[in-house]
Every structure is written in C-alpha cells, then in structure tokens.
Length: 383
Image (cartoon, rainbow, N blue to C red; front, side, top):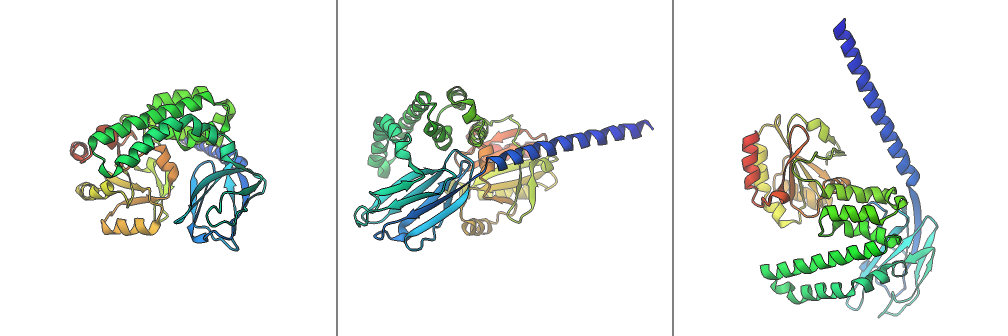
C-alpha cells in the first residue's frame, strides 16, 4: 500500500512537471507568435544592372537569411516574418566596374526601394525610399566616423600584409583587432539609447574579441529594459550565455532534428557520453581531424558513447558529399543556427564532451587541444 502511494506521488509530480513545462512552452510560443511581424518590400533595380550580379539577404532579428533572388523586369518583391524593430534588407552587387553594398531597414508597412539612375557606371547612386530607412542615416554614418581611425589602421595593415602573413604579423593584426573591438564597445556605451547600437551589438559586438564578462556587464548597463526584453534581446543573451560556456558548465539542452528527420534531444543521451562537434565541409582543419573522430566513434560502444556533429554548411549537397566522402557514420544536424548560438561557437572546429550528468568536461578551444590528443586520452580514461 505504501509503495502504491509512493508511485502515485511520483506520477502526480511527473504530471505537474509536465504541465508546468507544457505551460511554459506554450507561453514562450505565444510570445514569439505575438512578436512576429511581416515585412513586404519591392526593390526596383535600374535597367543597366545585370541581375545575375545581384545578391540579396535579409535579417529577421534572429538570423541572416541568404537566398537566390528571382528578379523579373528588374524588380523583386520579398515577404517574410521578422522579430526585431526592423527587418534589415542587405543588397550587394559586383561586376568589373561596380562594387555596391548597402543595408536598409523596413517595418511592417509595405516598403519600396527604387534605384533611379540608369547609368552603367553608377546604377546604385540614386534611389528613392518609401517606408524604408537607409542605415547610413540611422546611425551607420555616425558609427563609421567614430571607427574611422581604427578601421583604416586595421584594414590597411591586412591589405598590405595579407600575401605574406606570418606568425608575428598575425599577432600584430590580432592586437589591432582588439583595439577595434574596444572602440566598438565605446561607441555602444556612448550611444546606448540608439537602436542602431543595440542592432550592432547583436550583429557584431556580441562576437567581439573581448572578455565575455565585460560584454555582459556593458550589455546589462547600457541598454534599456525594453531593448533587453525583446526577442532581439533574448538572442543576444543566448549568444552571450553560449560564449560563457566552459569546462564544468552545464551543457545547454536542445531538441532538434537530424538530417534524417529524427528528433534528437540531448536529455535522451544522458545515459552516455556525448561528443558534440561543430564543423563545416569547407573548413580544412575540420576535415583533417575527421579520421580521429571516426576512430573515437569506432573504439567505443554506442551504449556508452555518442557522436553528434553540427555543420555550419549552408549547402546541403556539399555537406552530404563531405559526410559521405569522409565516412562520417554518426548523427548529423544541418541548418540549426540556434544550436550554434547556444554553444557560443565563434570558430570551427569546436568540440564539446558532455558527461552522463550533462556537464561539459571538455571544450577543445579552452584546452587548446588542436591535435585532439588530450580528448583521446580523456575518452580512454572515462570509457
């Protein structure tokens, strides 16, 4: 009788947790749906523009979406959802005579960008905006002036030495890069009430080569509660928390799909060790270490050890070709940018080893274990 009561209490507790979790997920989902907006923009290019050389992207407040534009009669209309104050439309064009790059903000009001100059030499010089905002006028020019000296110093150095970059020059470039990062932070601190600064923080500053504690403090002190409570704010927090992950941190849980469509939940692997790798087919060092990871997979039982690889590839065909070529016979996740943010991945290859309690016991970059010798030793000790 006592056992039955205990069992009943356990079931009731499980039901309570399930209801609480379901309620929490429902509230989060409803909040996100409510925060969604739709943008529609028509872009009219001049007749002198070669449509094949046009590249378009847009940022919806969470991710930057790259797509191949289908342009008819020198015009294209884009419609999609966004979560930020503005959706960012990014237009670039390149040929022998022209290199153009510019960004515009649009809201939920139907917007139009019309390029009105038919000159072959400067087809993007003149344009008319309806319900669209040129970032130059929204804070970009102010930022460019603020960064002028540091930007010139850094990029002039890179251009001058790019062909002959050695270790000592890399160190100099690294120092100049840190100076740029510090200058960006100064701009943000001085212009915290400017939405452009908040947008810049999500797009660039959160990834600066600056200590994560410094970034977190500046973010918390600089921006208003309204900014920080937005979906963009949640994205920034996710990035910063991910960057703050280190050995002995609890691994962020996740639920996603592998390339076969099967649901993968980290919680379902807590009976074994999980090697979580971030890579891409175009990453030379990633490819070089595949034989080592493959050996790890083959050396240990699936009952004790799981390998899950998250690719940063955008091209599914190239990813699939590489996975087959290098015989990567383990679980793969493609296209989950949210997971990349959760784990604070700034560079690849990056590898985490997660133990049975969900704790990170190895982080490749933190260990500086570039030949995976320590990871190989650690696995032999644990398994």
